[in-house]
Image (cartoon, rainbow, N blue to C red; front, top):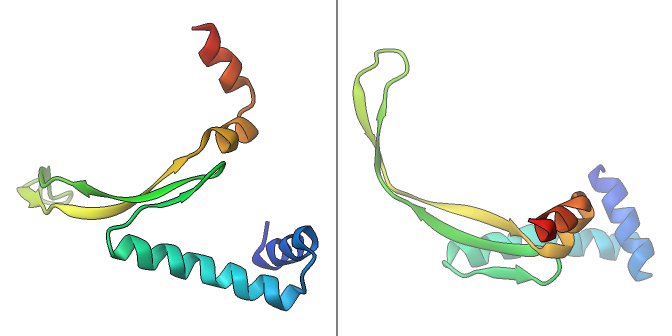
Length: 100
């Protein structure tokens, strides 16, 4: 789905003008990025959770020379899909996980 299609769908679903839907949809990534930058978690019930995880420093190898190097620790954004989103993408996952 392209951005324009998403804007149109949001406008129809919420019964607002396309211009209002576009402003709202443009604001969401900025808000989420800002909160993650502060180290906060953003939860959207029924959809998922955005949070910042810390990846520890680790050893690696330079791909061209093969020499060892240290990869620095980093803070990375992570998204965890909520159960309703997972079910909509893979409906039989719920059934198979219950049978195990």
